[in-house]
Length: 421
Image (tube, rainbow, N blue to C red; front, top):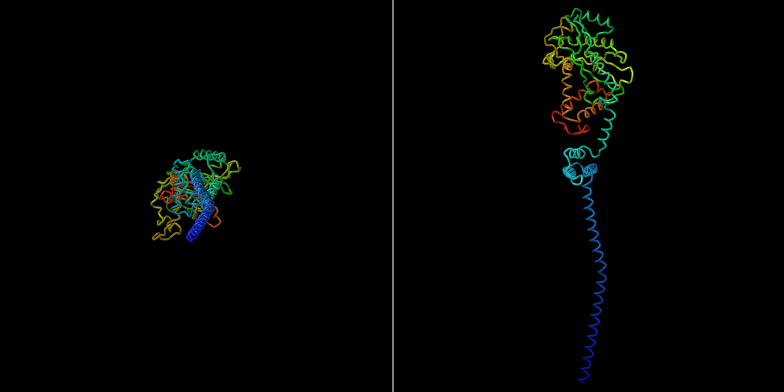
């Protein structure tokens, strides 16, 4: 029995060992199955990591190449980065410093980038302004203006050679003008009979091309271009009190009549129609106008009589001063508490300061290279609004003076382009 019990124990132990071995084998198979299942997941994870790493390297390469691109792509990057905040400005400046393969940008290039980023989101407006100026501007000394420049030289030669007319009274001056086939464009009121006024003529002391043509900002119009020429009347023709009671304007009108007579007797009469028209429709400011008979000249010329700045006392021409006495307008009127004559004074002061204003604009153009083109854009803008009556009160010359003052005062940047002024 003991032997039988031992045999059963041995059999039971063998079964237990067999079951344990079977379980171990089964467990090993399960682990192998788990490892087989995990291997694809691990391989996929490794592939994803490799792909991400490659993507980061590619992005870094692309960003590096973007930094090395030219000026135009850098501008586009600055324009598309946002709404013009401080971060955008810093990014634009940083991009400008690292263009051209890492070379530092010049100050003018950085200014151009900042201008593009701050003033407009695309280059469309700048391109349109440049194209407009290319079509509208008339530049002296080119093939287009060859005939006009030759005519200006001929006009100057004729003016400086005109004969002198000795001083005569108003009646004698009117008779002389009729003999020469011209009329004296006296303003209203005309000189009264018996007025103690001596009228004389002598060749201009200086003949100077003024206005937009001389400054390089002349603009084409439907009627062509008009070049202004200042004919400075000699100071000897005037007296100290000639600012009163239209005395200056009477002498100026006689000077215009003698200019017309002298020009019509010259060879210029074959090439031009010579007449008189009022500047800004002001009868006190007649000017001689020479319109070409053929298109070969390329433009009209307007002669503007003027005086030197020290010929008359400008301090007497303030806006609150009276220069047209009531007793001159109406006999017997009292001159006490006479009203101010600001328009009369301004018309006279404009003649006295014509060359001074021209020098001011010329100096401003030297300070700001884009001034002439900016003033030309203002003239184009003004001409488009002539139908609204703007031309009657504001001229291109006045707008140019305003722009020049803003440049001098630092209100607009002297380094900006014409479209930014």
